[in-house]
Length: 511
Image (cartoon, rainbow, N blue to C red; front, side, top):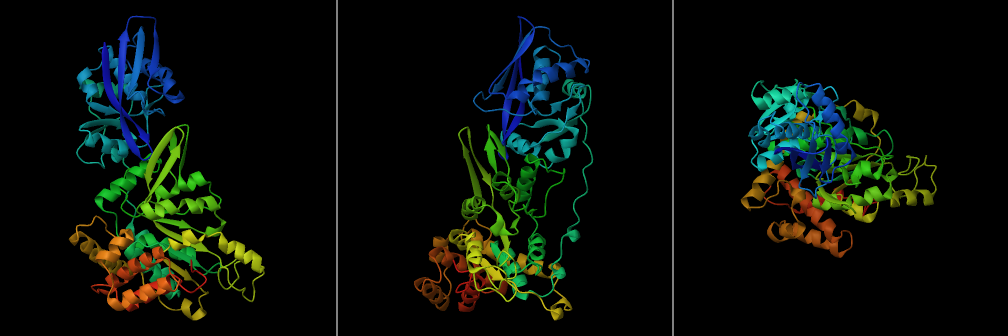
């Protein structure tokens, strides 16, 4: 007899449903698994047999063939254990075949029959809903994650015996374990902790309002990291769709906490991190999610950016333009989401006491001119050209430390209002974008130009070589953000001029 059930495997941050078929027929006892299974799945035969012996079910003493469909899709991991066990029991008439066939079953089996947690449950729930599957049975620890996706009947199972009882209708599925409480929004780092640095605080507000990328150069201890850590607290909460997407990514990466992620994520990899840890990668058909994908819809902060390997920095070109990262290997090709705010911080020179990146040394600088030039060249022109805001920070004075600073709760409403204006503008024009930084430059120039004086200023900067064409588009995007923050209908000359100054035109930041 042949019976089947459903499970899933993850590919990147998405899930693919897998049909698990079992044939119990005459022949010598044994299990054969076909369908591009890796070693972990091939070893399932031993885990499933041992789990069955501890679960009050009868193990078929005959030939068993397991087929994993689609056959051409590589399958990896132990997530299919429970589904393989159910398919075998359904084929031997110990579980109703109809109940098994209409249910997505996931979980790794222990030798004692316990069902252990698995990754990617949210992605699987999204895929199941899209394909019209109405029921999922997952490890109890994963129930809270799966229930974040509406429109599915989700139940938790703790052991193979419990799973069999649920499919037979003899036992009720569990409600899962209670997850940790949602993070307190008031616990986010507050902008009030930053004293002085008025220009940097204003740049941070502009970056948050328009989803612009930001670069900061300054000596150690001036507040670069402090500012970057406060950017997520200025951003609006994630929408329902974005929250599910971000939570699904974290589930695949093993970081899900059973709650919907509402706060934009913040990722800050160390400069010694490998390229795969930052960008993502794959080997032997397995995809590793990097920091650029974990920062999707949030903030990616690269402190000491010139210390990162050149290849890592150059690999950021693609996601900065398209919002995705493509990983291509001989045995896999996958596209991962990577639309984030990039914030980079750098010292002015290797010793940190210079007066500006690549410029003349300060009084206390011990670096040679060659060392300063080499240090500055680690941030290439193409990368700098993709950064909308580039500012230089100086040391705050004692007077700055005694002044009260505006708190995040006062700045965030201005940012939300500016984003609402931008979203309304693009929606009225039937455009799919939500922030100014996403709008393509040609469309922005053609349909949303600044006023004549501002346009003339922008053309003059391009013709004089102060801006590249890409840089002009990014200045125009920042100009629109400044107009949104000020409540103007379109950018004026002051907006474009200020956007150019924030970009570092005619300074050591010029790209």
